Amino acid sequence: MSFSNKLNASTTGSKRPISLVLQTLHKWLGLILGLQLFIWIVTGLTFNLIDEPFLDANQYRTAEKASSISTALAPTASLLQIYQAEGIIELKLTSVLGRAVYTLTTTQQTRWVWADSLEPLSLTNAEILTLAKESYSGPGELSTPQILNRETPFDASGPVVMLTASDEVGTRIYIDTASGTVLAHQNRQSDLKDLLFMLHFMDYSPDNGISFNHLLVQLVSIGALFLGLSGIYILGHKFHQGQLSLPFLRRKTAIGKLALYTQDAQPLAEFTDLNGTYLESINQGQERLRTQCGGGGRCGLCKLRFVEKPPAPNDYDLDKLTATELTQGIRLSCQHEASPSKLALVTKAQHRYWPQSEH
Image 1: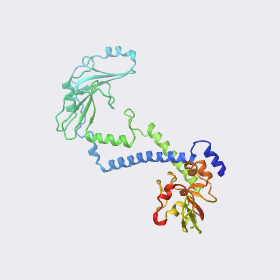
Image 2 (image 1 turned 60 degrees about the horizontal axis):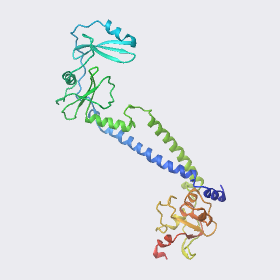
Image 3 (image 1 turned 120 degrees about the vertical axis):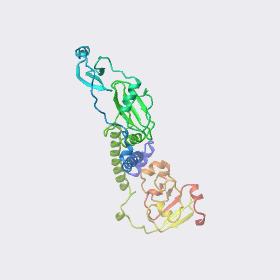
Image 4 (image 1 turned 30 degrees about the vertical axis):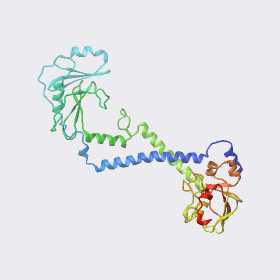
């Protein structure tokens, strides 16, 4: 694009050059993905440094023992007839506290009934406490059962009760009251494990479960792809505009003199060691032109006016300078490679902050 076309583009609207838009997106994507990468590293390192038994939720859980059934079983014909319309899938005989239980699974739901009376299974607090004690081998005393009103991650068919143990790890026992099943043991150390897994797998949705292919992972993958593609584009664009160069292709120090004038066209300084950009050449050994971005083309404080033959503006010039400034030959000194030329300060602040020893 020629200088006149670039200038016209800069005056027809407030749209930023696509390269600068991509750089902003690239920066924020890098920050977000970099934070997640840091979380992956920290949680992965933590898993490797902590002994696995320390994170064990079943430290005091005992293996379930098969118990003999001594009670007589009621005929199942009437039970099957009642729920036949639901579409019976399976009828299984199990036991709870040594008492026989029929587990009837239909296409609609699963039911548990006492096998000796065909009445729905129900447990008293004393029976729930007994179930918890049978699954627990620790030194702590168990609390009374507490019904949980909040949602739990357990696959339960009825209300879930929790019992806590007064041991050193704070064991919690969860029981499904509909089936008498001990759903899980948890403690403070397993809570740490769950937290690390949640952060490592970005499993922030309670109903999601640990998965490597949920929506957030997909979004991060797409973001990482866009980060790479935008980085390649930005790198190529910078090379094309001469903002980057390989060390073995870098130009040698320009031979000649850079004359710098005040706003009033009074001689201010001369520089003969022209290496890098105009800003770098002027600030060699001492900060003479102050900036906030260090020469990244973001603050616009290093702008200078070319007395003659200004270079074609690049995207940073078009973004930070007005159309009037561009036509006056003003450019960002951090964006153009230094060569023998005549330049002048643009603002009074630049002159005010110029090192007094060089006046």
